[in-house]
Image (tube, rainbow, N blue to C red):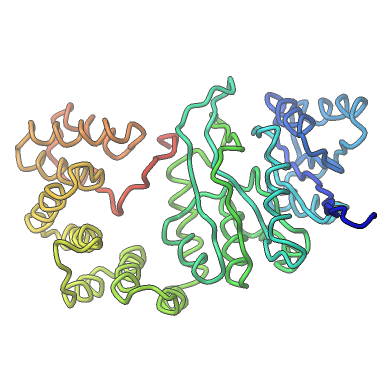
Length: 399
């Protein structure tokens, strides 16, 4: 290298792609990798016991793409498939891509630029981006779904509190970091990715974020993560894995205001169904209506009242919240439920309609609106929303 020349570090990238009965989409997934502006060293497809023509399709594609490889195994699940790909890879960085998803042609280039920016002492262990959902015809069906950078203990708390979706598809991970974590946990179904991210963060790794939609996650009938029920079960696994005491310790070790730490802890008390302890904790607080935390404080109290069947108190809180923020989706839904069972059908319809106008993919509101149309009067049949909504809701199946 001559004096004055800049040495650009070259990072090798291996794509690890688990595939199970992916004949309909795997060519599109592989094409989106072949079209990268930053070429990859190899693409390893792990056929996880497919019963369709996935294996034959990849073998045919291999004739024109020397970097493409395939490993066939009995059906052991995506975690085991990814772990096989990790062990067979020959690169410093691994890009995980599901066989039914697609990505921008500049995804790897942009990720590598971010890694280079951190310099030779780079502490980034993973990079992911904003994404959009697509349907079976590759048509975009969602707005941009955004994330954030996660760092160490603070990142650990944020990722489990907000149930942040970092799809493993489209994430670039440093191989040494994932080996340090012993790869994906094969004993966990559906949330093996969240489990890995929380373990990385719990060991003070950094997950970098690119605020540009570079991944396109497909939603279709056989996609197991498209179910809201699956998502809820996934969260239970992670909560049970750590336990309330560990989460409490991590929350209160953050350099946040005491009030924010307490409210976050109250939120977890609700998730662990410690209703009485949560309400007792909240009742000890004095939160002014002008506080940025007032709505969260009031909503948490409302859920405690719902669980104690104190519906009048809960409705008062929802109405109070809506005077401050008329677009608070969870309060619109829950108030709509209570209006309906109190015989105030027009107010109920108005609240739920407003919720659906603001959040078209809001399943609880859709379900409750249908019950009102069917003149349902039994409260137990309705669905309360137990936490504040994300700014943008994902498209889920109703399973």
